[in-house]
Image 1 (cartoon, rainbow over the protein chains, first blue to last red):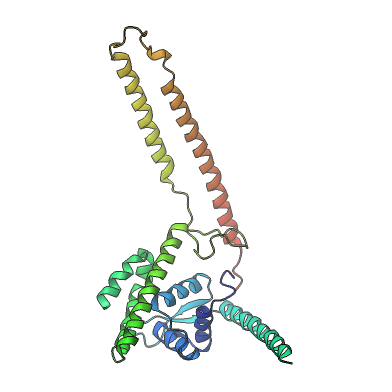
Image 2 (tube, helix red, strand yellow):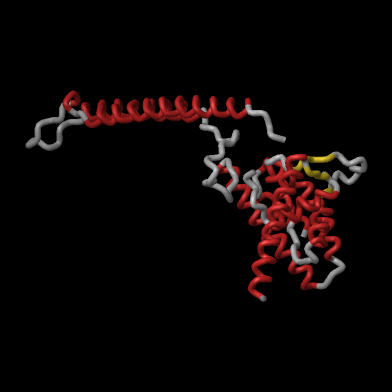
Length: 107
Length: 174
């Protein structure tokens, strides 16, 4: 649990892998799309994060059927999915509190 | 540009490069090919971002390789992180023994040379080798330090080993 609380790039990487297994290039593109082009990961940042997530066993390597280009895919482990759900719940609760506070100030 | 990227990967530790180097190069190749159709400013931003990411990543991985733990959490509030790659080098006692033997040999030689030299100042009595206590004292200090270091190493090694064994007995949570 040393990765918690998650940084934005790591959260986006995990969200990208939550849907389906992906390889590096696909993760980069999905992260860019999810953040409306606001977050653009470099390969150094991406693979540093993937290495840490592999170390913590939040993700694992996944053998694709079509591995003709030698690209390595990654997918979430059950532990990774559980931790992602916890983090999303935490953010949801934080957003609710933030909304209440902002609404109170506006009244 | 691909060649330069490949060269920059050499800033990473060898193990990391072997594991992720080809994948990183492949992704960079795809991105580079895509950026070639975009404007100059987009390409410059891409190159700057990649360079910064590589330098930052290489620094992190090198620090991790040296420290044996993640650099962003060197002193975790949850306690010290015991990593399997953190090992006390087994060659240290051997090297220390060699250095100690060299020091003792040098002391013996120096004592012999001291004894064989003619006395140059007639007003002072000659220094007798058996009364010259500096070198034996130094030898004693070196020997004591060596003994303390060996005992310390044995204690640390025993603690580390038992700790790792206990950790390996714990079943993973997932």
